[in-house]
Image 1: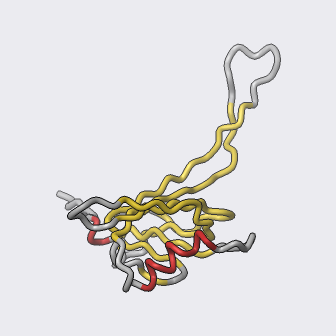
Image 2: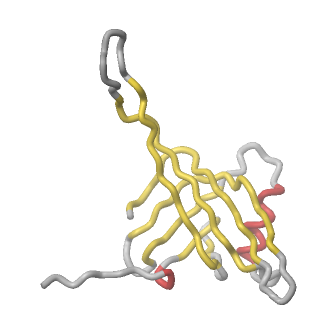
Length: 135
């Protein structure tokens, strides 16, 4: 009988600008591919071909002003340069070779503050260009 390897959140990491973000509560990534319609006049059924691929990601990070990598990530939204791209890596298993990465634009940062709770910030990324790695 073959044993099944299960990954938990403790196996994962999020890296931004080649630094591990220490206090990530969760992250998610979506890789999508467009379906381009190729149906012609006179056809009775729609047909499609594979189109462009894209990737977006989000992360919920517990805010600690002493955590330099997280603070830099939050402040990158304020960068006014048109070419403000950074490398983001979504690592499923830090012990293995299971990660997705690419050049990313930080598209939003939002904070959630509640009395008696840890301040959490949600950040959103959009990958531009090729996607590297695998699940």
